[in-house]
Image 1 (spheres, rainbow, N blue to C red):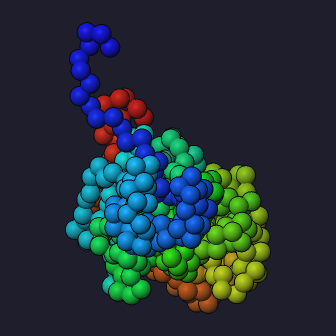
Image 2 (cartoon, rainbow, N blue to C red):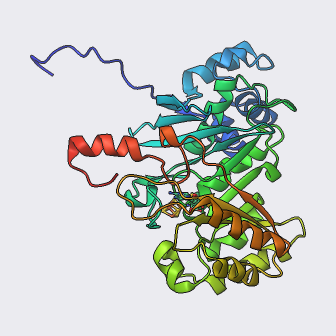
Length: 373
Ligand code: SAH
Ligand code: SF4
């Protein structure tokens, strides 16, 4: 621009990012380079199984090809805004995407496993009344690169490349971060296929759980097209209460949801469903609720995960008393179901279920006058 200051900012990297591309995408991207189709498979392995970001390390490709690829392509990583560690060793990464939107990824270490809780959207369109994410407007769906990127970020942090066959710190993945994964089906499916691929991140489908608030028409497709373990956020045993707590229930009420679950497990015996049930004091935690739960899910191969409610500023609910949780668990267990009570993790860094994104949005809200938090 005449008279304007000389440009000092480096131009943005215009090379095509290969991250998030599946085998087919890579084949298409590499086609102009006039290489044999099996090269795409090798590149897939370098990216997702070896975690390589520098083309020069792709030693089974010719030097010429490596140089040509580096000119056209890059293998990106998600930027981390902040990383926090809880006193209980839970780790939370606030990741920043290319358009400056943010989402959170949480790692929860336990004695026998290490679980990564992955986000599928920035915010959520649904408005479950007990969930902090639900108070935030959906900004957008995450794409495959942004979903698989969260897992690769954790792998980088643990130095777990190439994808180890044993002694992993990251053993399990739950799609239980921000957002409703079944409202972002194609991107979640594409990302999880790369994650499950034996030549990719190589995480077994049995170690991946997708949690949904109950998007009934997508449950069957989740089973047949993705095939990971399914968790249903039930939280109430009567429609009037579930309408209030999980408003998607007005569209897909409990009976329809449970029919979809029956059909889902009917496809395969291995398909035990996890029912998640947040424990809200005096709201859904009575002995009668517990008995009704066992009656409702009769015949569905299921386990029950009771989640003590994690409070957040301004919320009207309290967490159930320990005695009420024990009583509830006892009734469900006596009816023959396997019950776990989720231990709240990372509450001090707002990394526990339903607390995600809160701090970052609140900080922004103060600056811009945005609602939320
Ligand atoms: N949108 C999906 C997945 C993300 S939420 C779903 O709703 O299933 C992951 C789990 O955390 C869900 O079971 C959700 O109901 C639960 N949850 C949300 N807010 C919570 C809170 N404040 N305390 C405890 N659990 C919460
Ligand atoms: Fe969205 Fe799940 Fe939170 Fe409901 S519980 S608002 S579906 S993230």
